[in-house]
Structure formats: C-alpha cells, structure tokens
Length: 142
Image (cartoon, rainbow, N blue to C red):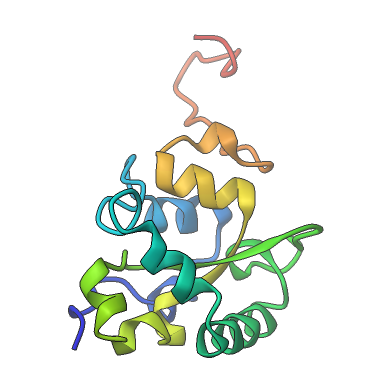
C-alpha cells in the first residue's frame, strides 16, 4: 500500500538548521500535483477525517508546535502538518499507511508550507540567508 518513502522525519530530525531542513523538504514548485484540482473532494474528506485529525494532533505535540520541529520557531497561529513525501489520489482512495505515518509528517507554519510547495523561501517568516562570497559586502543587493 502506498509508495515507498524517499525522505523521512527520522532523517529530517538529524538536520539542525532551519535552512537545511527547508532544503530537505522543498518540492521545487510542485503544489499537490496529483491530489489538488481534479480530486480536491478527496483531500477535503481526508483532511477532515477523525483518523487524520488524531495523527495530526500527535505530530504537532511531537514537534512541540514548532515550525519544522525546531525549538525556538514556535508557530503562533495555524500549524500545518505536511506530508514529507507527497501523497496521491491513490493513497487517499486506498487509505494508505503513508498518510498517517508520523515518519512521513512534519509540523510547519502556513508560510513555511507555502514556501516548500512553491519553491520560494521568501514566503517564510524566517529569512533564509544568502550564501556569502568573497568581496561580497552587500548580500541583500543583486
């Protein structure tokens, strides 16, 4: 049932920096390709199910309500629980284990969730530092 996972919370938890966790999770502009749009009703039913809501609450508790599970990055408003490996219509239709596996889930702020899906770190509340180069005195200028 479901596809094999390529990434995991177990691996993610060994990454200490916010920036590196973002890089691990980013989807390079893939916004729910297989589950949004043509089968949105599946998503809506799934995300309102008692089983999902129970797992979601446990993941938020595990991550202490912190963005990407990093202490000091507490989420003040709405926490989103994100599937580390994107899910498909087939996963929902088959009630696949990957939907509920805490090793495939991470707590994110709404802004970080959008940044991961759209591939745009500027959407996050926490700025990702630009890489410094020799003789670079103004990294914020292009």
